[in-house]
Image 1 (cartoon, rainbow, N blue to C red):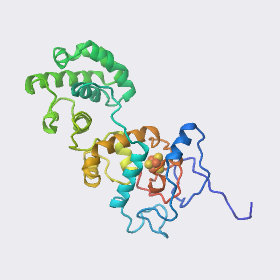
Image 2 (tube, rainbow, N blue to C red):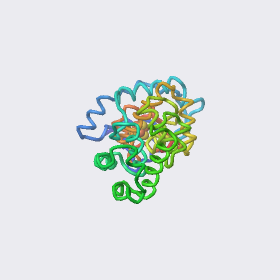
Image 3 (cartoon, protein in one colour):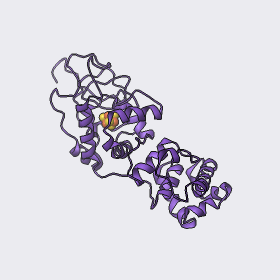
Image 4 (cartoon, rainbow, N blue to C red):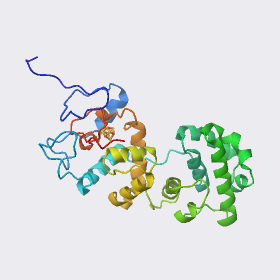
Length: 288
Ligand code: SF4
């Protein structure tokens, strides 16, 4: 190796604040990684949207607008290429089942919830069957999803209220949904978007929260404020699909502790400060 040439390596710590352009051999040898890299678009030379040369590392470059329409369009296009037909991963056959599954998914995983719900809906096949229960009766059936006392109260309380006030039908109206116990905007948006196909808001779960910050679509950390930022930035026609895509991205690649940046098709337009591999400037404040 010629004297003075020091090869760049991806930081093991995931903190690469000093790295500007680290052209390194992509790690990850799994099949999954190969498949994902196939989907990745090549980094166009010097064409990182919104970025100017000569900007200091670690800072957002002067004039850089992370929510410029052309950058948003590029993010949405790449998400479409990666996850063209994704939808909610919670198993359900009705608005009520989706509502129950979403309530149970708080602080749990969809896989975990999907293990519980088939038997749950076999045992209590109608909304009225849930409404006839006490929370204590439901607790053993949902125990494995965690926080089972609160979740039982919410599910039984929601069933009773829907029977008493909404004629036994899950309402397709956000204001009415928000009156149900255990239902906040995230749950309401899941039901409205996935079942009723109504784009009233953007689902902000832990994945959307983290990745929106990494992609600099928001600086906020509260879900409601993040949702407002996303509603301003993402075209309404994409609200439903966008959140599904980001949730899948968060599960597959943009995971919380060690995102698989070297395999990510968004890599050359992502300046997250906690990337594990980067070919572009990283912005200290853009962390998940
Ligand atoms: S490059 Fe890394 S941090 Fe950015 S979106 Fe992809 S996986 Fe997430």
